[in-house]
Image (cartoon, rainbow, N blue to C red; front, side, top):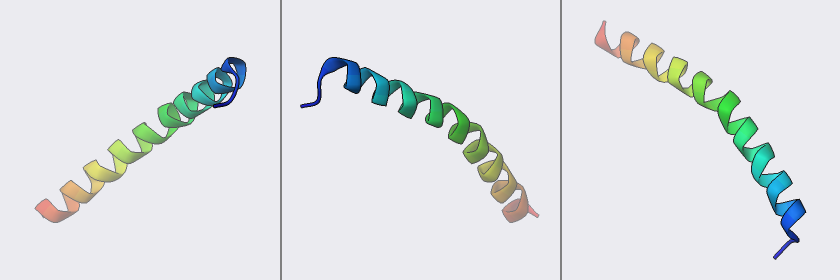
Length: 38
C-alpha cells in the first residue's frame, strides 16, 4: 500500500481524469443512440 499522500494524489488525479472523460462518454453515447434511432 502506498503512503496516504501518494494515494490521495493518485485518487485526485483519477477523479479529475474521470471528470474529463465522463462528458465525452455521454456525448458519444448520445450520438450513438441518435444514429441507431434513425
